Image 1 (cartoon, rainbow over the protein chains, first blue to last red):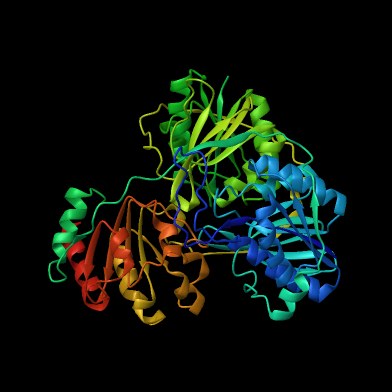
Image 2 (image 1 turned 180 degrees about the vertical axis):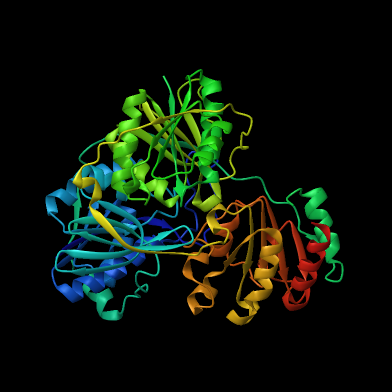
Length: 245
Length: 322
């Protein structure tokens, strides 16, 4: 089985979010970048499936050279090779066009990614790539087993989950608990240095919805503390001041 | 020209967030003079439920009652909505941001060659060009996004607009959808859903517990409080990881993102990953015995005290007041 996992290169979940002085760019000063946490789940499951069924696991990212350490980490976790589409990821449509092109070229049986990126939270790329390739897409998938060409999945729905059956090829946007995150071991880190990381060109320049400026929400006021022996005061404040009851 | 709204339903009931999407479309139509708001509802829905769509501002409802559309099958829903879009000659599709909504909208973006913006928090600026404000970084920032396509899709974040309730009755029209076998690329073999409870992503009030609750057996106290408030229950990641509560109750960066009017956090320290799931709440109350818990910095109201002592008292005080 040939598996493709799409990887986002995003600020660590503990990063302080700030923008450049003219509010047109994310300020990367002091920010550590990681594999998107949802993509990390998808990658972990892909490694398990590859180990179980054999075949090849490729990771892909649309980004400039600064995303290479993130791709190397994916190789250290267990991917066999990596593709970097050398371009700034301008919007979800742009990214989907690139992934669809290289996914078609590689004829993958299974395409996994996170349910959404944690920077722009779009949650669109799996659906867009699916439609571009004429492949079914599923999200958010929390369990995925492959038996021959039959795929059994659990998808989270509000207040519960549903179990689905479908056939390869397909695309899934993943979330926990599909697999446990894998921490690269020393052997993985060493071998990642020599695994192929192919840099390819962007195939289309089309965009549809590009972010032009950014802002932060207004700062939160100080907390109002209420004595633990006077909880009825809290009820009054929620009712009369916050007006949420 | 009309604005189309995709209505999501759960077991025959129209979701409140979909009514917000109708309200949003109605305000947008008034702003741009884009004509009427047409809602498209899929699957088996009770008639009285369809009425609420009119109150929120739709003048016409296309109802595709095909029971195969009851379940949220992404491909089939995308096909049905695309057919409705061309039938009414719409240029704009509005829907509620949700995991199903996003997945369906993404396929529609390609089918309709439409620019898609999700997590929209305000009506677009249509003065010159078309700019939309959306929430990014899990509620920690906003981005102004420029749409350059003729067709547009906006997925509206919960609680971004006041629900309109004074609309007129809408006409309901049966809508025949043509569905191909390829629209049913998957088969749902079983569904597990908590019944009779308030669903977490939709809830207006959420009561959440963390490790400070000390064990699954102590959740009765939180459930009592939630029941008194008509609230949904949630939990922190460690709690669902240990298995005290099911995964679908996990609130946070990699779990459910909630945007209720009131979020009550009990025995949760307030790790940044948890805050990412709750920072869109209108009002946050934190109950924690550790006065240094970081959650107090993100809270509107706080009580420093033992949950086992404070929570039952709060439930009693609420019962007396409500």
